[in-house]
Length: 241
Image 1 (tube, helix red, strand yellow):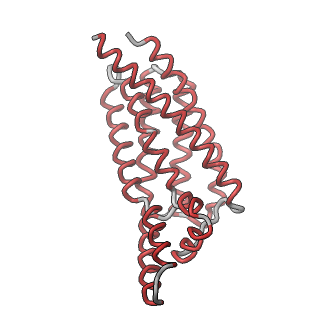
Image 2 (cartoon, one colour):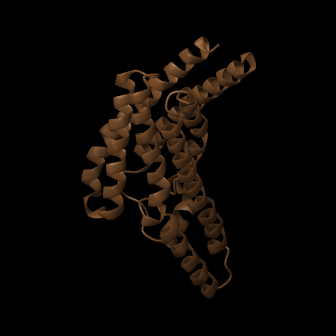
Image 3 (cartoon, helix red, strand yellow):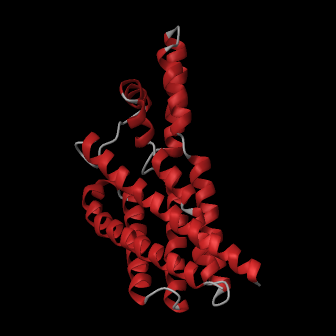
C-alpha cells in the first residue's frame, strides 16, 4: 500500500507540473497571437500563401498550423490522468471514459496535424526546379490543408474530443467532491463554452469573429479551472498516504 501511495504522489506531482507547463504554453500562444496577427481570425488562404508564410517566418507558419496546441495537448495528458487517479475509487467508470476520450482525441489531433508536413513542402516548393513541380507541391499542400488546417472540419474531431473529455471530467469532479465545487463548475462551464466555440467556427465560419466572444470567457474559465485543480493536485500529493 505504501508503494502504491508513493506512485500516486508521483502521478499528482507530474500532473500538476504538466499543467503549469501547459498554462505557460497557453500564455505563449496568446502573446504570439497578439503580436504577430493583426486580425485574430486571419489565416493565410491557400497552400502557396502558407508556403510564403513559412519562408518569411517558419515559426509563425508552425504556430498558425496549431503545432503549439499539439505540444500543449500532449503535455496535458499526465494532468488528465492525475484527475482520473484522484477519482479512481469514487467514480472510476466516468473518469476512465473521460480519460479514454481525451487520449483518443489527442491521438487524432496529433496524427492529423500538418504543421511539420507543410513546413517540409514549403521548402520543396521554393527549391523546385520547374513550374510543374511547384504546381504538384502546391496541390499536395492544398490536400494537407483540407485535412488539417486550423478551423477546418478535418481537425474538428481532434479538437472536440479532448474538449468533450474535459467537460465530462469536470462533471466527474462535481460528483466526486475531491476538488471544490467552484473548481468543478468553472471547468464544466468553461469547457462547454469552448465546445460551443469549436462547433461555431467549424460549421459557421461566417460568424467566427462573433464566436471569439464565446472563446474569450471560455478560455479564461478553462485556465482558471486548470490553475485551481493544479493547486489541489499538489495538496492531494501532500495528503496521499
